[in-house]
Amino acid sequence: MAGLAASQFGLYTHAVVRAIPKSLCAHALRTDTEKSVEFARSVQQHEQYITALRHTLGLNVVELPADEDLPDSPFVEDTAVVCGGTALVTRTGAPSRRREVEAVKKALQDLRLNVVEMTDESATLDGGDVLFTGREFFVGLSKRTNQRGAEILADAFKDYAVSTVPVYDNLHLKSFCSMAAPNLIVIGSSEGAQKALKTMQQMSDHRYDKLTVPDDAAANCVYLNVPGKGHVLLHRAPEEFPESVKVFEKLKDHMLIPVANSELAKVDGCLTCCSLLINKKNDP
Ligand code: GLY
Image 1 (cartoon, rainbow, N blue to C red):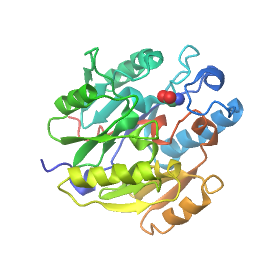
Image 2: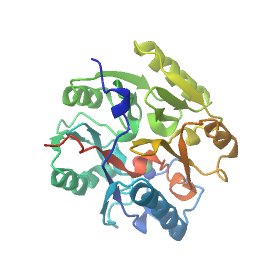
Image 3: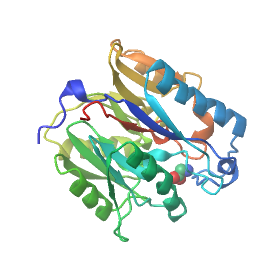
Image 4: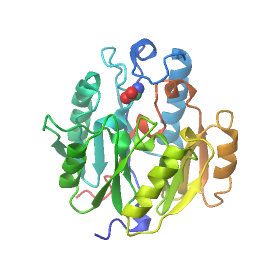
């Protein structure tokens, strides 16, 4: 199981995103019920994210319309796992989110991906629990994702090893980690994040470099490898996580794009949550 060549990791041509419904403010699922989401600000921040993908990085962005009946639907990452030409449409852990997959499935079919559906009613999986390193998958076992979900993912992506990682104190595995380069895992400093990293290191026969940031939430970044630009990292804005941004600024080979995400973060939305990234470069 060799995995992707490092030069291929993070190459994308398309992104699927979904507009924010007003219902997100009152009805999106959240772990902290005290904070209130400012709708206009959430839309402005989401537009900044989409603009970075579309205009700064040149991706073809498929923007699905908002659906007021689906308050968590901007978090498209949870509804599918896309790797190569295959898209596994998930069975989300939260029953209130299951209908989100319908529009996403259609968009992925329209992009002519090989769409596989998770039909087993004992399985749950949120894409936020899936960390793809280019060599292998780590799947967080959380309140949203179970062992059967991880098994179905392993079946869909047979070219890659799949290891499971218990997730404590956080919604998803990627609530506190992500990739920042082909061999580089960004990880938060909390006990739960460090414990999960240790498990990943024990499960893998590869030695990853790590970049530790003080804030778990800032460890969720979007990495892309953009022709003509090289390593690109969308990360949380300095006004949100100044100490973590100082760590990113040490990445001298990266183009850094700060993106504010304070509003969606109030309903547990991270940067990776808001897009599905797809590479159709190798299509016939
Ligand atoms: N609000 C995102 C989620 O709980 O799935």
